[in-house]
Length: 130
Image 1 (cartoon, rainbow, N blue to C red):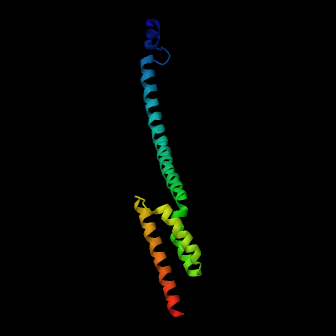
Image 2: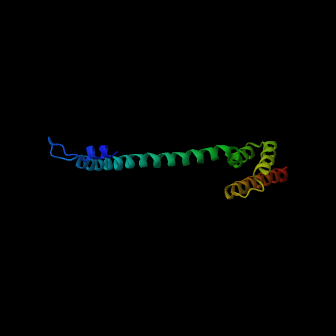
Image 3: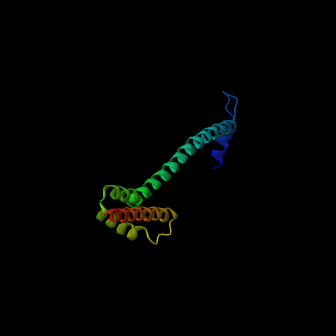
């Protein structure tokens, strides 16, 4: 081990530098390279984290797509007079959304209730007209 240390510390007569100078220069160069790598990889890691967040949000939306589209489906069914479908969709909404503690799902259920009330009003108006 002492022999290895002596060789690394030896003087190079051709360049006039000792091995210690060479090692210092090498460490300095490696530090610069390491800093550049950190910058490049930190950008890549940041992008990967953002991509993961987007994928998670898309997965969540995909999972709840049917529940989130219920108000629009009910509105479309009311407009076309398909009240049997309104009842079916309302039953599905109650099973899926009622009792949810998630604010967004509560908001969707509120919109479903609003669309069902509109359907009830439309039916009452039709009954009164006849």
